[in-house]
Length: 91
Image 1: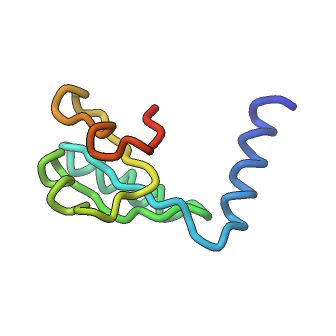
Image 2 (image 1 turned 180 degrees about the vertical axis):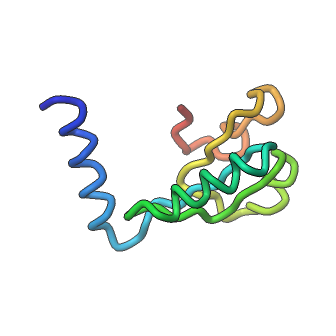
């Protein structure tokens, strides 16, 4: 199976799931943050559950309800998510 076919299968499976994959965004550029949130919310099987301008704001906003995915481009050294959620897969 080619990678594009695999990705297509993954999206179909995600879209069929009862619960969409929850995504939180951490991005300091407002336009990028808003664009990514719109893209995620417009994709079947995904929902943007939070959009934050800093990791500090994300930590305060997310609380104990960790999303399935945290999408960020900020420096890793600012926050170590594995320490807070050791069971999560970090890519």
